[in-house]
Length: 252
Ligand code: ZN
Image 1 (cartoon, rainbow, N blue to C red):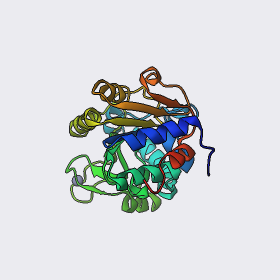
Image 2 (cartoon, helix red, strand yellow):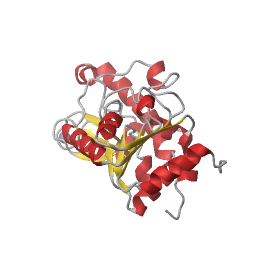
Image 3 (tube, rainbow, N blue to C red):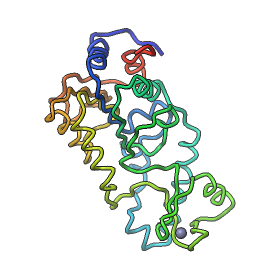
Image 4 (cartoon, rainbow, N blue to C red):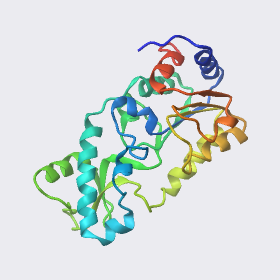
């Protein structure tokens, strides 16, 4: 969908053109246009159901059953979702050689489906399942088949340990290596573009500040206001896809 080239889009285009070390930070808002539920927002999955924490998952069989039931439902939505104009525009940035990488809060794998390769997934990925005992990782698909066949709490076939989607659950720490690299990327950037994140939870709240303090320009595209807006060189309050498509042309 084409949008009228507004002053805001022209300014964003200018920031992209002038920069050569761009870091893109994305949250759930970029994937809602692909039909993926923004599960932390109002009306989202966690608004309708209490989240299962890692501690509950480990301690309580009933919670494990509940967790897998929800994950099974989410997996179908994510497996069938396709990247939208925003994901594709960000993938073009990588092709142009200007991108340090994408830091995402999303677990849906849509950036990779769009072709992005340099990516840090702060909250892990729903495309994989990990054994909490032997740490073996496998794709979600074969586990989904086992759920469909009637298993409600799948166990590792190598060691009988508990399996869990390879995401960071509530109550679980982020991977320190991933976080450290995300911070290093933010500090190295000359332009940080935040898309579809409310920039409230950590480390999302800190990353734009770190980049800004290290001298980067900052642009924020989000449907709602964010606490970092006052720091930004540009704030565009809208859905991201059409804006990114217009600001990041194919011939960059
Ligand atoms: Zn195992």
